[in-house]
Amino acid sequence: MGALGQVLLVTAAAGIGGTGLGGTAACLFRRDSSRMVSLLLSFAAGVMVAVVCFDLLAEAAPGRLTVSVLGILAGYGVTAGLNRTLERRERQPGKSGLLLAGVVTAAAIALHNVPEGMVIGAAFAGGEAGSGWLLAVVIGLHNIPEGMAVSVPMAAGGERRWKAAALAALTGAPTVLGAALGYAVGAMSPAALAVVLSLASGAMLYVVFAELLPEAAELWQSRLPALAAVLGMIVGMAITLGQG
Image (cartoon, rainbow, N blue to C red; front, top):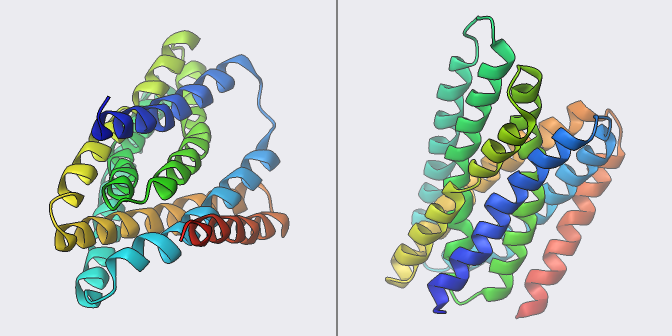
């Protein structure tokens, strides 16, 4: 199996495996792991920030600061715009409102999984296999609650549980497409790699600060999620800097 094949396999495990696991868990168990999910989201957010700052942007920014800044803003803006557009559709009333909410959530997650995959692909393209593996693990973990977010309203809205879990798993498939794009573009030249890394960094920073941390705070009003985020940053920093 070639390098690209390995990247796609790793990304599929993180994307499809993570959301599928979350969807299945949500169908098998009744809730109330909100505190654990909050800590998990916070820790994953901390690791992502560390990887973005100490690895992805450390690779992209030297000599290309303007490109990196513009790429971060563009990646953040595009991801925010896609999520905002899809959130507006969520307000449609109807008999199967819960089912619709699940479908809309699935579409939103599927779309923002593309830049997440790009992060993994770009890391591998830059020769940072360790970072690629770390990002795949972290993204896979953060995909678990996303899979839950898809399957819970679908199952509550009348969809069969196995089908809700399967649809949750499918929302992770675009991660593989993103990984292929990130790897292909990032492998072209150092300039292209800088663009991809900064775009992916902006997208991931949006996910961290607009989704993961607010969701974690809403799930558990405590200081422990903040500590989990700090610990995540320390772990992410130790792993990324320990490679060099």
